[in-house]
Every structure is written in structure tokens, then in C-alpha cells.
Image (cartoon, rainbow, N blue to C red; front, side, top):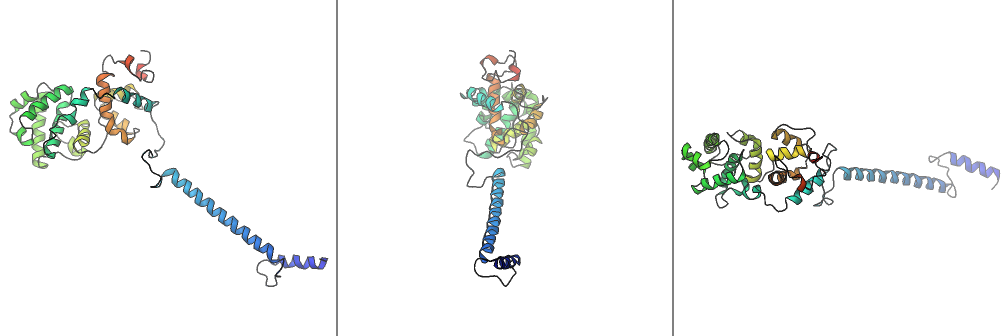
Length: 304
């Protein structure tokens, strides 16, 4: 090809895609390759954006097909106690026998399983009211005596205070509980047709019913996990294990602190687990740290 031909080809290419004087031979090939390259770059960029979008989607929420039984919901990063998973696993091991008083005589064991649902729920609430500041064995005995006379809202309202006191004695603060039981039973008859409320707010509004009783009543009577039921055992153990950011001064303060970090799927289990652990090993006075699997992991046991 001579110089004139070269110059002609160069000028023809410089006119760009809008030129109508394009040759059909070798001049068309570079434009086709350029268009293909542009398409490849566009396609590659699109694929990258799709892959990035997919990665972002998976990072925050798995699709229905990816969700399995062992998939845990992602949680926002936050505070959680050191070694709590191992501590919990050790407590489960120590409680595997299910032989603590709460396992046999707790609120879920005190009602009459053959009674109508409404009566069963009332008996659950009553056993929780009796259990405050009272050992499970004493509560179970009082419930047995009450059930022997037919334990319903109507039967309690027809029982005089003196007889009711004799039936529930020696539960803690039994005189106050006679009054609370009568008042609560009257409210249930008047407002709830003899049933118990199905919300924590309504339950704690009843005389003699606190937050721990309300959350347990929701779980046992209604099958709903509304919160962590924290009694003196749970309160004591949570502080000994440092399961709270700072030392808490009341069971209700402990409940709030635990619910900030403890996975919700553990809320139902934690009360019975820790109550039995507190009855058998992590005692209020002279805890049995030598026999505890958490001795090396428990801040309260260090130096013992």
C-alpha cells in the first residue's frame, strides 16, 4: 500500500461512526471490534453491579431458600458478656438431670391438666402469686390443698378469708396473698369472664402480680414469650456471671439488662435453667463453686 493509500485510510477512520464514506473491507473491522469491546465492558459492569447487589442482599438477609434450621438471624453488633455461650453450655450440662425443685414443682406443674383451659390458666396465675418469696415445695403444697376443694374463680370468691388463709399457709406473706387473691379473682370474674388477661400490661395491673409472674404466666398459660422472667435466682446468677454491663440492683433491672443482648430464642429457657441452677449449685449463701463447671469462667468464683 502506498503513502497516499495510507493517508486516505487514516482520514477515513478519523471521520468516526457517522461517516457515510466508510469502505466495506478492512476499515469496518476495527469499528466492529470497538463496539464489541464496548458491549463487553458494559456487560461486565452490569454483571459486577448484579454480583455486588447479591452480595449485599445475602449479607443482611438470606433468601427463603437459604434459610435453614441452623441459620441464626444476624444481630447488630453490640455488647455481650465474655464466655457467656460456654457458661450457658456448662449450666445446661449441670442441669441435664432436671432434678431441681423447680423441675417438679414449678408453676407449669401445679395446675390441673384435666381442667378446662380457662381454669388451667387461672390456676397457673394463682400458683405464681403464691410462689413469691416462697419455696417451690411450699407453693406446691398450698396448690394441692386448694385444688382438692375445686380451684376456680367462683370457688375462691366463695371461700372466706380465714379458710383461704389456712389453705395457703405457710406461703410467704400469706395474709397479704389472701387479700390479693380475692381482689384479683373478683377482677377476673368481672372483666375477663373468669379468665386471665393475655397481655403483660393487664397482668401486672392485677393486685399481687409482678413482672416476673406476668412473663411466666404468658409463657405457661398462653404459650407466648413476652420477656425474660427474672426472680431472685436469675438476678443473683446474672450478676455473679457478669451477664449485665454493670451490677443491677433489682430483678426488673436485671431483666432489662438481659433482654438487651440475650438472643430471644433463649428467653423461654433461661428462667427454669437458672432457677434450678440457683437451687442446686449457685446457692445464695455458700455457693458450691467447687462442683461448678463454670468455676474457671465465673468472675464471682475467682480466688475461691
